[in-house]
Length: 533
Image: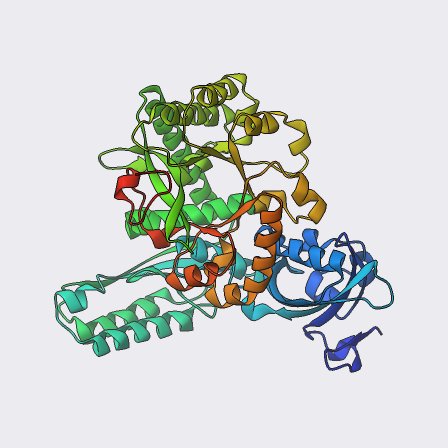
């Protein structure tokens, strides 16, 4: 029987400690695990001898790769590392959080010692629960944790909750009591330990297929009767999708669940008409085809419009540059930049059309002054001579403003194979790369990156408590990037507390929903925009 070393220093049999959270790694300065102690098989799904040789980058999820860079830096410098929180793929491919401390290995400077405490309570921190993406993640996680069981996903609507105070005038105490009753009853039906309320009064939960939804509905209706007996603003409704599939792979299952979630929150319960995940996936494919036709038609009619988000220097309370977001505006519908990027992900021809339209717009804008503008370009678009000429024409036109190209889809292996990157930089363009695509960055790689900006994953800023713990490491990262001529951008900030923390990171830039909806020009910004008078 194997033995493990617990954090207290006690050596015990694995049979006695199948859930002991403490493991230790010895890594080389490249991040490869050369030895380990602890219950490796339980947490990582492989025997220790097979686990050796695995790199930290292989274990960690994309949103944690930038923090792997911090570990590699500390290992190379043989410095003590304060606690970091990283997310990994566990033995069942579930997302698990872990807390990591690092110390030099005194017997051999080629190695570095890591103390890892697995903490499943952190596994939800990588996404905000009360968002559509958070709900989708929770459904996927529930399916992984209950593999082989028959499950269902039920959407629940209890009506206009805000109307209880706005129209019926009930007290805040009564409203809080009602919401607590609803949440408690939904939790009772759920197999998870939290409920997703993405919009007020609209919930999603995962449950066993045998769960009595009629009984759930009856109980919710009784709570409604206590606060709105005539059902003037409240009424209960449900729609259930069996979480079963005959032929979908993991990515297709996620698309199917995402589509069902979107339909509920955008079109209501009546739009959730799927008997299986296969039905939802088929409906998603049809919708994608229709939306791509809409985008192609808009491109043919030159109907793309643009709005801007501010990318802020939080220490100076000034927009360092603007981020152009292209969209299709229609009377009753539209396509936002996120959907356009998703629709064109596997259609390089359509993506090139979008990127060419972006170039044309940037070239003709005269209302932005000298404000720097960023736009997102697909890496495959840069292989098109027509688009590259369009960009170089912008550089040769004598335009005073700086143009920043956010290169999407650029992985480390592609960098030396695309000379256009260096051509664009020599022509005056700034390049911004996504850290989740670049992966862990050693000091050597950082110095060779064709980048002026590094876009960090939104997961880093979603949990303010974890962000606070990571600030010392992020300061070090920002300073190392600055020495290489690179600015870091923290993407996806939603609250002022995160902005305050990031204002203490030297040279950091910040963007996200916290700064409001996109604007039509720098004159509408709530703060000064650098270069625009």
